[in-house]
Amino acid sequence: MTGSGVRSGRLSPLSIVAWAGLAMLLVGAFLAALGGLNQTTYGAANFVERYLAAVADDDLATAITTPGVALDAEELEAKGLPADISTAMLRSDVIEAGPEDVRVVDDVVNDDGTHTVTASYRLDTAILQTSFDVRAIDPLYGVLNRWAFVESPIAVVDVTAAHYPIFTVGDLTLDTRASKTGDELSAFSQAAPYLAIAPAAYEFGASDTLVVAAPVPITAEPGASVAVTVDAQPTADFNARVQTQVDAYLDDCATQAVLQPAGCPFGIEIDDRVLGEPAWSIVEYPEVVLTAGESAFEMPPTAGTAHISVEVQSLFDGEISQLEEDRPFKVALSASIRPDGSIAIQLQQTD
Image (cartoon, rainbow, N blue to C red; front, side):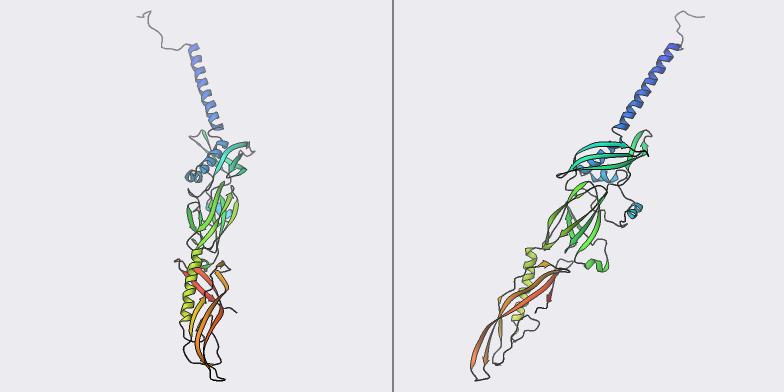
């Protein structure tokens, strides 16, 4: 028995076409949105911009883990870098300035599917432009583009720590001897390469009680090598501490009641008979001014004056008199800083 009010559960051909059209519109809209995302948020240009933004924000954790940034053993070898090259500079609070006012000026699709993205940016006071080659890698969720640098943008900074092995970069203090052994540890000047995030500006220096180096700014550009020399020079405190040791040495010499104090830079020869004990005193101490030499800090031959007081008797006529005479002398030395921070002094021969 059928009732006139019962409706059929089947869709009419017109409804099927309508639903199919709607589905196609939705798929098309989704694909269009996906294509838009892959061209913008997940595009090659945006990949480069995100990396530069991470560097600018001092977000080194994000910058270093960006695909294509980290260097593996094979890449280090291909670049002629040691496998144990220091990564100590790859951390936050080291960069002086990152890229600002970033603008992508070109995005070229190459025949092999890679992109060459050219970005313009300001680094400290310089306006720079760099081209980055990026390649597609496995997409996110199988549909969203992902990219990696073809060549890592990491730079190499070759640091020469002249006259003192420890230097500063940003808030970081590093020792160029960290991976060295044997005789290398005693070299007066040390050199070591460091991996550094780029593009970025850095400032190197040295500041210690005994030595100081003027700040040296450098710019590390992507994939490049840059050399910097941190020229450590003696501080006033270093000179004062050596002065104290020199004065003490000369005072000790003056306690020797002989005409030629042993191991000392001054003395006198007297032809007459010496009746009493010679008494030495220091009239003028040599002023210590250290400069960096080939293997140590050096004080060139520097003048001082000692005074002798002694009673003598003339061998010619027997007259007794008191000899009072100033005796000029010179002191030269080299000074080095021991690992424990103490100072080692080596006296040098003078004419």
